[in-house]
Length: 495
Image (cartoon, rainbow, N blue to C red):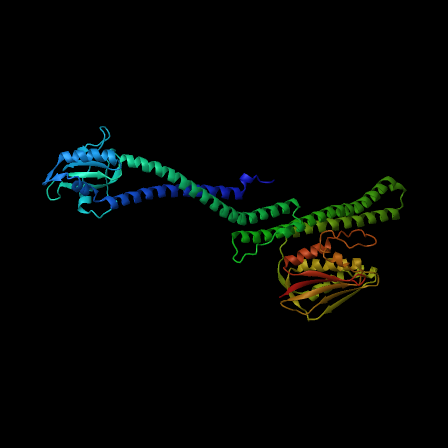
């Protein structure tokens, strides 16, 4: 199912980046506005820190060591009209406001805090000292102050607010326009540049994830086929990152899944073939048993004693064949379930080979097959489960007799020990196994294609051989050429 664009990782990362840039831009604008105000106040204090003293001297507010209140009043009235950017106040020694250059009702404070005033008089070079704004209960502004009539004999203070209410309004209006313009430019530029760079970087990251997701979806939709695994490749990066590591592990995982899926499909095909083979192998003896028993039931009185014995003998033979098939199925099921674990013991393998071959003398005589034993070492001793290895030899020799031609040869060869193990070979002179079937001969119910099928051979023997050798953690394989017989090999650990 295709993911909506707004639900994609790329969109979420882009939206997150846009939100971050927006917050950063707004924070920068607010910080810039605050710093602009601080710089403006510092500049006013630096330029006008002697303004109050200059007003006293220029306007002759102090005359003959005394305060000229008439001159002070004229100064207040003059500056209220000519220069409303500053506000002038006359304070007593307790900070009470006695006179000011403002219209009635504008001044909201009756007194101000004198600590900043004294600090300014004592340290005139220090900047960023803010005092109370008589026109506001909350605001503090930069100011200039001087003691009058003089510092040594003060009767009060001339307190000048350097950024009056009118100037503040003008500055605020201009600052708002400037901040809106600059903030808009900064935000727009930051967003555009950040988004473009961010979107490019995010694309470089997310397209690999998107490609990986498409490959996985394609792998699933194509029934876990090997063709779809070709899309899984690791990015060629100088320094691998988490995504390239993820690509590597997913490539390995898909290959493993494909192998498992192929094995399951092959196993499913084998099960289908098994059902067909079991049906055939069970039906043949059962049909024969049923037919002979029905004949005996219906025509019992009309049959001679020889015919009755013949029918019963045939029925018994088919029952034995059916019993062998069922026993093979049960044994294979136990080996698959690992219910039978090998009981390891030391024994001479050559003696076991002689014992097993002795059991098949009658069968080989019927086809005039000669049995041979070749050993490259004297009485080798191996470590294995003697009962299970006997079953391996039984199945291999029985298989060799089954597929060998009349007047053929079967040879059991024991090679010299090498790397802690020896190899046992069962060689026949039968029809051989085609190359394309050699990899399948150890699978359940597999049989080589023969001109005619013989009863009682269900194709379980070699599969049981493989399971038993695997339980011993050894190897089994076949070598064969068409019409030149087959050579089955398995290894055993040296005791």
